[in-house]
Image (cartoon, rainbow, N blue to C red; front, side):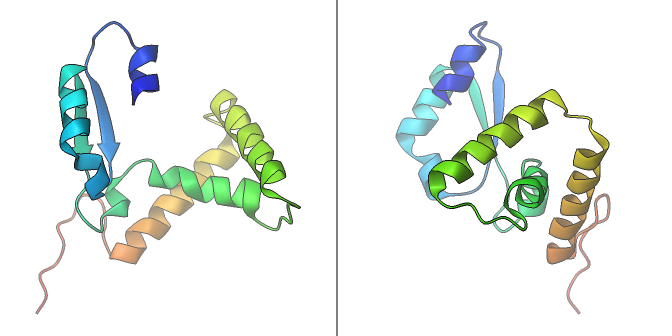
Length: 123
């Protein structure tokens, strides 16, 4: 959070979407966020489908870790960094967009949730 705030020193509010992990809600974190104009936006419990960052993990898994046999964590870390550099430079690449759509659909199907439709009440 401090790194993100440092990159945006203009004082404009920053909205951080976070999971509902209790360590993300400590008084120290909340106080720091309030002081530095960072709005903490928590997703509901068990709602990974509602967190936009989740769709980025599918392509990362496919492009870096799928069918790989990295000899150690150092090599894996380097491959992850290489992918992230490429991904940031090619955000609209068709392969990335397809992988993101596929991952969003997979996440929604786990929760049996469709965008724009309320969940059906259990009978």
